[in-house]
Image (cartoon, rainbow, N blue to C red; front, side):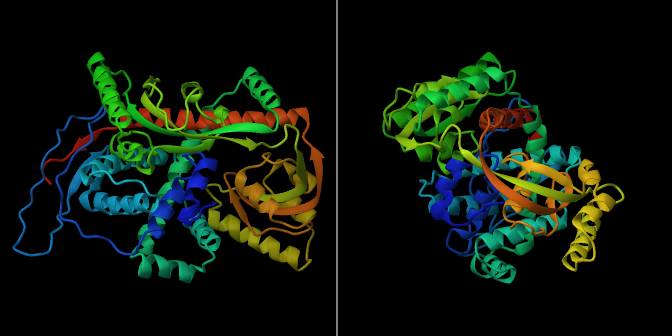
Length: 483
């Protein structure tokens, strides 16, 4: 996990990573970027988001609570929304709103009225609950060892020891460490379920790769990048003509507000149904081939600051603004890449071997290697659960992208001859040893693989948005009016 709390770097971080990859970074930034402490709020009027087609309708209403005579506002907790078989309470909602407002302020996004933030945040929480429920149905879990390692990595990236990290959370920021742990667990869980439900279903054709490589060769070393912001008005699956007309009118109304001088970021935070709404809708710097084709076509002839006409996709209606445009020097089409010759020992997690067992076994094997009591090759043959065991764990020459990110990151950090600590990936736990390294020009096959990955990342982002829309439409959502 590669995240940072430095708010000055959040914008550039967003531009490099897809939305499904930086949710943890945004969450962490919201914890530590803003001034310490929570503002205390009385229960304000509750403005509910318009339910999707599959959810029971519930009008916006004024939530009035009797309060004792006091100068201090009184908070009244209670169940606010039922999502399938789980609930969202008022306390959970208002705690999240406080964090979101801090993040928006730190990112210089103009705050819309608080009741509009409530509606946006509540909708995000509904989708999150639907995601975590899907993860449970898929049997996805995040064990304590994985969670501890992730939080240790976050602390280390911020040059803090774990005691210092906890002190900053609890004493300076007023965030209880157990609550922070569970938030991070939830974020990892949602990332994993998205990978399972979306990533494996994305298909890329040879013609798409051919077109991508041809465009790279045509552009040469100079590549155009665009910074685009969006406001999305979602259309539910199987929308009726009346629903479609209502969403179209809403999009046109918001377009007119922006067109007549309204603050785009504030309007995005108020009205957009996209996951980046509370960040002002900014997608960050991207090359056109890393935008959905519909977006790239809409902004191709715009000048910075201009709006595209409202566009329609299967997901809904979009208002796009070209924030800026620039030329950059891109990487060469045939770059020199580092190859690594490595071997590993894999212990898989099974019903009889827990994650803790796997980590313990590899820790013991690492101690034997450090004490020169055995060779890596012999231990791999005896213990590894991988097909490479018969070859002493030898994986041959590995190009960037050949292995899962956790494995590659740990491997790249090793010196030649060095053995890693136990590393977790989706396949289990690994000990990795680097045997040698070399640089080589990327072959034609590797060029196509790199192009495939670039196209895949763009498609994953689009497919994730569609999957979340379907998940939300299928969820049973009940807005409680008696709390």
